[in-house]
Image 1 (spheres, one colour):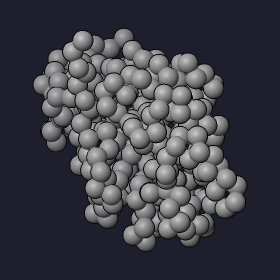
Image 2: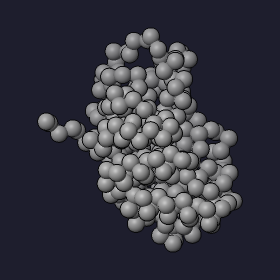
Image 3: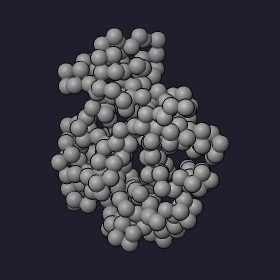
Image 4: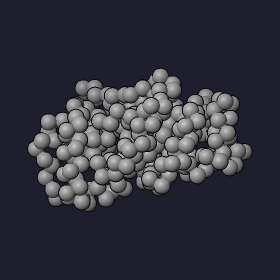
Length: 273
């Protein structure tokens, strides 16, 4: 069987390692505790060389169990959420993930800005103690942008996760340029507006000019727009359907849209919305 193309990677500024440009968000397969479905999904990403998995709550431990069952500890970049308000509980949860996956340190411990900001010294201590290699802040609405920027201004944020897409471009005004300037790795959420994007494009024919940047589906249309931003390291997708996952991963190959094409993409989708 022919080898599957490997998804491109972009460098994490603070560590120098490559991060696959398309990763997995908190899929319903994880949320539902379905380890069989989780493995089917994770296997697709593994085949394409994609390693980033971003999970919260009990999903962390579902993914950790699958990682352990299939010996993936060294080939998965795990981003998980913790509370800085409860140092002892978070350390215990982190240790459980380490014991299960066999990792020597977690890849990314992160939190929402309302928790991260008042307890950032705790996150920094976790990194200093070697519990995690990176620390970060994540949110998906513009109200959190000021707090996220204040944290980035400290120079100690390794990862920023934020919403951005052709229909949500607000982060491009100040947040993404600041992350690029400060050497912060950027992960994008809400690529499909939590599903609303597909309601907007349903029944519409993909424009012929999308083929100019090797786009084959509406899902790839949004993902390629996101990936064409110079600040972006990785975009998360949350499907539980392996077929949809393969289509999403396809956005990582071929040409990305240029500035003129990006404007055209935004104009088209806004006219439909």
